[in-house]
Image 1 (cartoon, rainbow, N blue to C red):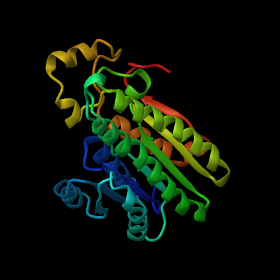
Image 2: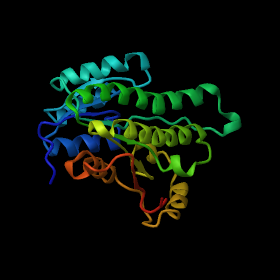
Image 3: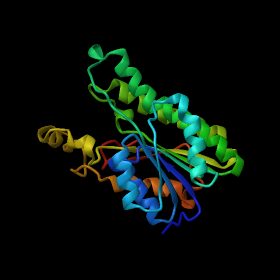
Length: 245
């Protein structure tokens, strides 16, 4: 089993199902974790469950404050950042001809621009240690598209291409940048899908079921570990066979 003792780890979107599972995995593997999210109560619940983690309430859409967030997170973790998990994201679905410009901008700004800025300022910290790993959580929708999700699909597809560029820029500095692309995972987001539509979706998944948050978290741990030191610019698909690249 991997041991992350001494590793300083930031997990954004930690109050969601996938984020909380990622936090739990790293805590069990002795990582020093800072969890961030917008829901203060859920952050408090995480703090109660995992006594040793740090938490910072933060809204990723506040781009002007991201540099300070990275600086404050680094201080909370003891002055450095080894691993950044960009997990936070939103969706605001609508058919394209009905989608307002603000619905487009909200999703692009929160999912894509925030990931860029968080990565940018984290890399500045990582360069000092000549080590770092960034894992960006994308989505199967970024590869396949989906009705009513042109904004979400665009944001997630762009994260993949951006991650490849970052991987190329900083490979020689021992900073790896990879993506994990989940399919349909059992979370509060997918709980909102009605049962009839869930059954239709399952017909497109060879494993005939939705994944669990820990399925994504396990892949995050692998890419963050020393076992993945020669992997960069790649996307791991966690989707039960729904999309095979």
